[in-house]
Image (cartoon, rainbow, N blue to C red; front, side):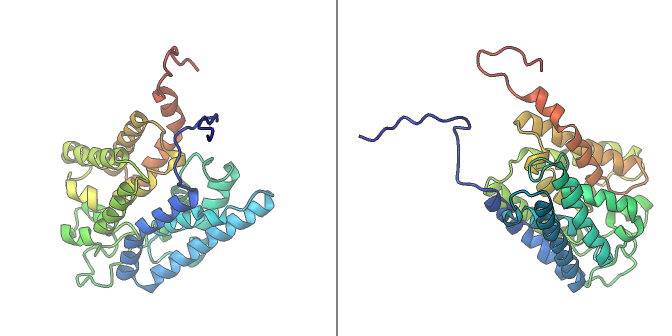
Length: 318
């Protein structure tokens, strides 16, 4: 009779998921938004995506070589980082800045902190914020899509920017399908929603962060909008900026989000709160990137106070 008693260290609940399989599912989930971005902004958007991913992959390979560590290019995490970063670029961004962003994301934000799982902030968002601070004009070079007939609508501003300036607004349908100015991968709400649903069905992410994040932004924009810097149009706040891609694909990053359910709920609420503060009470029309990074920083503190005490254990006073 076979020995059915197996003694091993935790964790005792396991599945067949690997880093590569998880990253592949994220890439599949991002495919609709990627196709939509290329469709609306043309082949230049495809070139920006290819250059950013290439820079991220090359940086990952060279850094692992220099640090004399096992190669991780094959786990697809660098591809995901490059794609997410590219989707946060405008299609007009100079190719050399796109490449620098890929290098910053991998070398500075990811590998210098130990590689995948060791970074304290989302690499794509960290790189994007650095680029926004360094090259603000190039990072906000918005153009209308190839299908817009009224180019005055959002030629120089995203829907959130137009709303804050009190200028002409895009229709809800245009924002839902993605026929608006903005970053390559953030404009099509339906494409991002399909990708988010795929991740939920595959159990790559859980519902707490996207649901509470988007819900918090919706409720606070309704409550605070009329007394803030501009009108609190709930649908504009949900569809008109980077909320959808941030809530489903960036705030849910395993390495930079809390490990407990309660922690994820607190984290998501904080992301929503900071997003609205940035949108309503600063000179920036958007605040998703900064909001998520700020909450990334406090994730260790959230984890410390939300990890449940083991059965029979006392109060955690670490």
